[in-house]
Image (cartoon, rainbow, N blue to C red; front, side):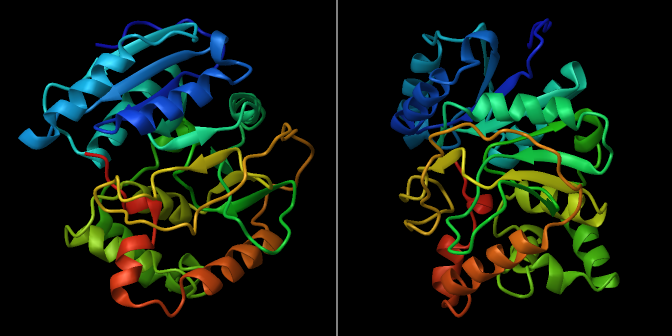
Length: 308
């Protein structure tokens, strides 16, 4: 049970499972954030799916029960295995319904010391702007220069935040989402000009080949014509691409350098950035287009990685 919340800053949801080392790296980086001691942390720990994961899950649970460095820490121990997607959907829903907004991270994300400041500032600035559905903190290591801040149509999943008004647009029905994308002839732009197989990922979710909540979040926001704010310098480093996740194999394609200075919000046109979209398309085209189906299945997205 989550107790009542009285904080001024957004609550942080951290989702963990059976990776003690990754979880510790994630927590220690988060503790170094400027606003950590003023923030309330809610940790959702999924139960073991199989007997062989029980020991690792228990080690994670023992660790998170000892945590300090935040204004408060609440640990929610799931009595049964929900799986990554349902765990995130349920935990995010609980928090936004109670507090109106939430910052979400998983147990394989290293945050910049400026992550919480950026997320809270952006959540406050765009709280009443219906055009903006979420805030994101990770950007791909693109060769092309990105704007200092920019918007893209849709939503993302590597260190993100949203409001109750944004999350209520989430549609868990992948089949419905795919049908609508096809009906409105949006599949090409959804796939960043056919440079990344997001549609295939959604098809696989429908078929049960992956358990991605993130592809449904992206599609839900995209179909609603909503925008997500990104920083031009990454405030997240992903450390889960080491075969430790259920569905995500080893790859260095997501490796990026954490920003060593704050990302300061400034006046910005609330519109899909053509410059950023072209940069993403060039990155996808170089790193993903033309890969074999087997390799694509291993590295095509952090959105399909599973930790439970």
